[in-house]
Length: 285
Image (cartoon, rainbow, N blue to C red):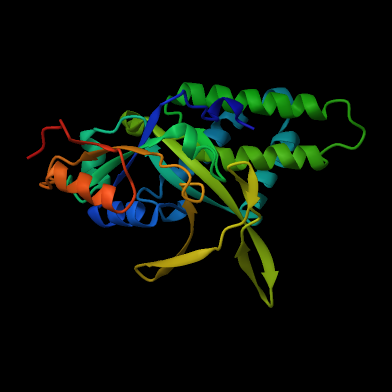
């Protein structure tokens, strides 16, 4: 529903994934990207930021549209969590930022992998640009509320399929809002939804699928352990069955002592060829 958050990259535009040495090896060796449950990410509180913006913006419009209408949207937002689970992989438009080296690459000893963005948005994902300015976040939410109200205005049977559809979309797109403190990350999020399905006396996760390089494709839902918690994820082959190589650049972290030539040989040998290798310019002691 937040159409202005959709990411449409330019030709030859790169987006960067910061990662540990182990993750760098796994990504390059397996030629896959991992999209994980957003609630298992580094900063759990960021998942509450989008909803807090919704609450603030909605409160501003109660005098205009009335509390019952706002409450109807809020109920759909709350109920959406029982319908689907959001997975995401995180990227940055800047491949050499000191704060990201510190946070996501084993304290600067890892890598930043530059992918061709046009290739990645052909995966079974919804690509979202993250917005950090709070005033703009509020305006976007208010604009969406107004559009939903316009759609419902004058209908004899209000709050039908379209209402639920747009409110649910809004709910999942709130992931594209973050605290202004993270602004220098310039984040792009590739997201994918898993559905819940009844299973015996419980629920199970199931991938409804998505368009993968133009064809419908379903992923196997997997889990990994994060301390004592099983975390869901899917792995997406980013090569379109070995037809392309979207990895165009690799930046070695400021505390990464690897020889760039050795990294180049590694990549060429495993079939990830013609990649530019360079060292970070960030000063970090």
